[in-house]
Length: 204
Image 1 (cartoon, rainbow, N blue to C red):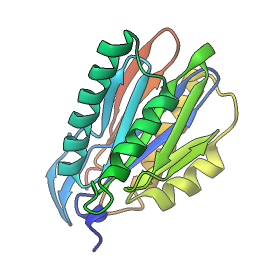
Image 2 (image 1 turned 180 degrees about the vertical axis):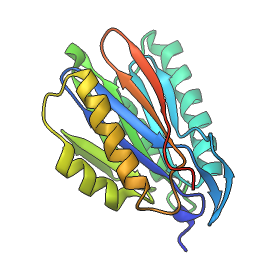
Image 3 (image 1 turned 90 degrees about the horizontal axis):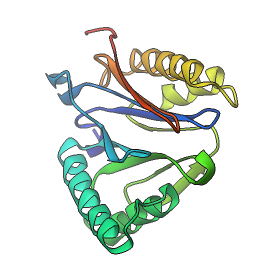
Image 4 (image 1 turned 45 degrees about the vertical axis):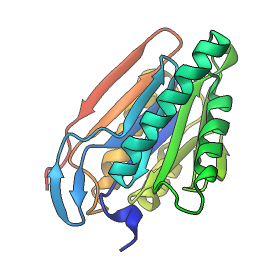
């Protein structure tokens, strides 16, 4: 078993019309044993920027703390929030810095940039970025997430339709992966508001 599969995870981000959604499962396991059913994988950097961390749970929490520290330093120096593209470069550099003893995380970054343009990207544990215009996935359920998102995604979805699409894709995918699941957590971000929703899924 790979170290990335030790805790199990599923994270997906999807782009809509001037909005985006980022979702994750809620299971924390130790291989096939479930430890917690309310584990947080999606973290807030600022009001328009979020990061989802799949992979080893302890490394995800450590990496998030380091990223918050770096972002606060940036805010003090620049007196503004970081743009999503800049933040993606920061995460990439931070991961590559530790390439000989990496954080076992695969981040998914989603944010609203200039003119409310949604930005999403993911990377491997060494910081190699993969940019996309539609959706990005990571975690143990990533193969089934790719299939579900490919079949359900439509360009320029309105926020409500985007929520429905990402929710159905997530729930369908985690049912096909025994290391992730136990419901879901969805963040829907528009230029004017942020909606948090918890999904009920199969509890087995």
